[in-house]
Image (cartoon, rainbow, N blue to C red; front, top):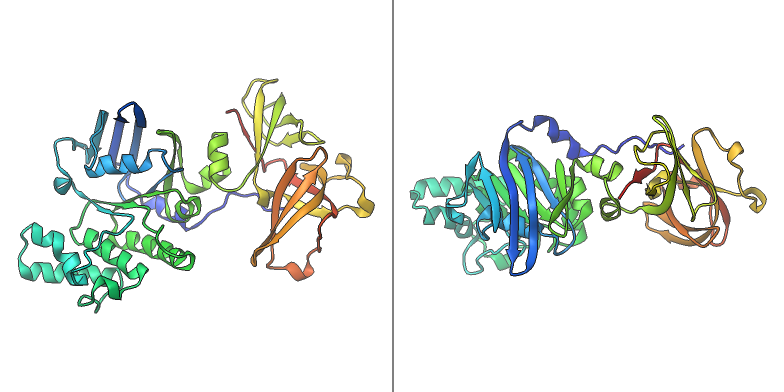
Length: 390
């Protein structure tokens, strides 16, 4: 059967080192622009040493929340605390945070070293200390020896490193990142994900990143807050967000998912059963749902949790012939997309509903070959689906 244990990535690793005291606290924070509520009564704590991601679609309020923390916007209601102190009276330059903007905001007329030194000069530091700290910051972001270059002589990734160095050189308690990788091409974005993680571990300060890219958040963050229409939909580790979403919105936004509406017909402590109109067989679960029997629920099933096999003679499988704890339905392959490392399939079930599944191409030479319009059966273990009440 498919391995259905929770996915553990490097994003889980730093969590054990996180200190138990919050460095950032949002207490009932609301922000209105006229009649528009951009952030709606958000209460959230971010721990010291975390790499925290604010994740959500455009217009969900994540950037507004970050800008209020930085001091560029003022909450309509509520408080924002840094190290237990209300920062409402403090202007942006007096707060122990620094921000890297989506556009990097690197001064085009200044050399790299002067860009990095700019904030320290505004603070009136001595020339010797500025030179030493700028050199350290450039080495930290792997730009040592490039201090005399102009920004237009750098690649996109290098300009982003300049922006990071300029923010880190002031030694903030918290670094704020607004869509930090969105301007980079796909290959460089993957490289910078790893570099950001390594950088955060080296400097040991709290990073808070805003992104709409779910893969980016899952790959980098120790915890994520998914936002929708100004409110927090769920706050959890990347693995828990993916494996145990608390709503249809989170399940659909974080990763690819097959969603089926159904009725909860059985709900015991160690098993449950949901009947879905779009599936020819009930969905059996090896755990309870804690919902009212007869209520409407939604079954969320990730594509990688589904096994696909040929149907001998085109016949549909029988539940009694399936392995114990396995759900089985019949279908026909309607689409195949080859993506190099994996192949994606769309399988049409009886009644017309299409289900997404995929398989790794790591061992493709000893796997079954599939083609368009081929009858297949799909199977998933009873522990694989998430059942959502809203």
